[in-house]
Length: 131
Image (cartoon, rainbow, N blue to C red; front, side, top):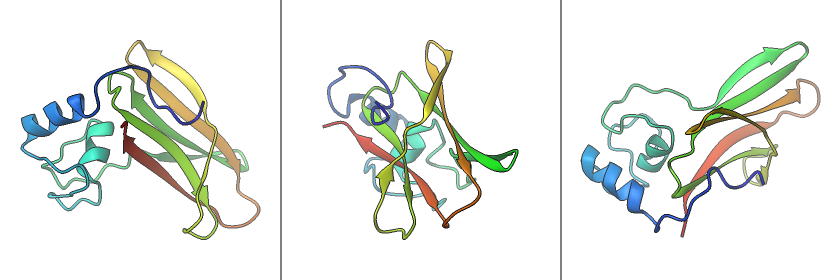
């Protein structure tokens, strides 16, 4: 399924809470370093929540007359879901199915190739903690 970022049955928040405590942050929705990424997004992509150097977890590159969107998942972060979504109006979002490539036993790449023609389309990565 395109919804689940990684398998696992960890109790909710166990891993985020440990990471947050180790990094001196708490609320997953806050962005204390003001880099535009919430603590939960920084956790999901292995970024530093105390450094304002922005690094987009979603990479875009040309592929012929199309473009490719790619992001990587840490399969050991089992307490979150990461999904790629798209919208033409920034209000109504739909899930995009991606192709999965196993990089290692703990890392996976997700990618999709999309056309450059047609209406303007916006993309985002939605990161949520599992209940």
